Amino acid sequence: MRQLLLLALLALLVLAVVWVIQRVRESRSPALAARAGTAITGGQVHSATDRESDAVMVLGPEPGPGRLRLAATQLVFTAASQRVAVLERADITGVSTSVELPDRRLAKPALVVVAAGEAWYLVVPDADRWCRDLT
Image (cartoon, rainbow, N blue to C red; front, top):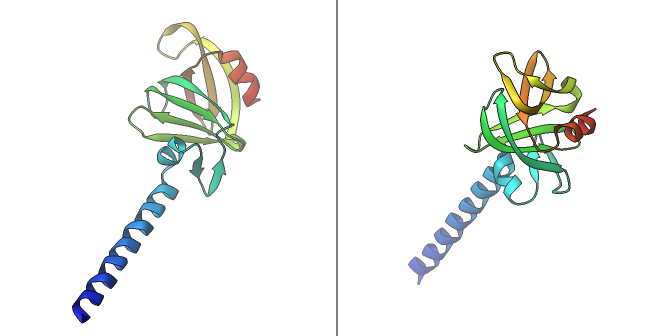
């Protein structure tokens, strides 16, 4: 009987540890939280009502396809590889649209976001609206 009680306590302990690990992992991963309808970055929770669309980062920290999300305090690009690049809106110093990139010309306008000397070039649907929303 004593062994059965110890076994039950051990099972509860393992269950509690697994539950805590999952909660910590979810709270630290913006990509996992975004799938659940919110993004948790820097301790802030952003709702699913924030602006979001498919995007292609042409030049920037995570080039390639992904999702661009505009939250109250951040611009978040989640690459198809699930890597996340974040710009704080307070750090953004310039926003425009352009077909001219430093190394080539695009067929359609790209959203250009400049912050702290870093420029992101993103092809998004309705780049002009994204530009207005960021200013």
